[in-house]
Length: 357
Image (cartoon, rainbow, N blue to C red):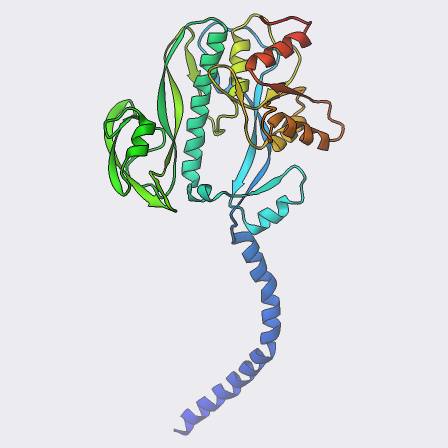
């Protein structure tokens, strides 16, 4: 017993001072821990914003190959891409505000329900459909044979979708109705609909439930128009790329047209631009114009083509001019384009006042 009391006494004499020292140091420990906790918060907590930063040029010829006789081009025609960071950390957001070439925007509610994987696959679908539209537009402008049919493709799926539909599916009918817009509108809410789709060159049926969400009845996917090429005078090969989206359409059309035309439109010029393309040759607006102008300037571009629509408040051309004014010492020329032939005519005139009929 005395030995036991002695052991407890020794432990007590050792523990008590330690506890007292901890109590005295607790305030200082908390003060020292606050910066650490703040760093952890800033580097891990994500906010519902998107950061967009300048990217790089993407030479069209690096992923589009025409399996036919083509004419040499002195310089590659390039599209331009930017970098996007959805739901950045608080630290990334604050750091991005220090650069005038970066922009920050609140993430729309609809985009908060899209996974990173779905975003990437959606971008690839948009890229591939854009290439087909560019190919159709170019060959028709050159009077070359090309045949195609209009289809509807699943471009995007939200994480709340209930069913077996997949990004890239070609939708043929819904509940037996080939008028897809009508079929979607008439599908009963909180019930399953039967979709006939083409996937991996096979036709199958899948079930998708139309559900009530935020006061609306929705399926949870987005369809876009896709032009499937069935025959062409010039075969086309498309290589894979990590760059997605439809904004390369205008420059892809210009590249294909130039490759199949005897007269080289580049001739010493470094040409880039942005804009979607419709099969009637009209250019469509895109996002992130400011960052794309910065990218083109940093890459030494001589001529930068931009879609224009003076009838809208957010005209891409007006946005590009404002961005260009922010860059000191830039002699890059910003050229507005309504139809892709505007770009052709501009380059022909640049090289000697020729006219493209």
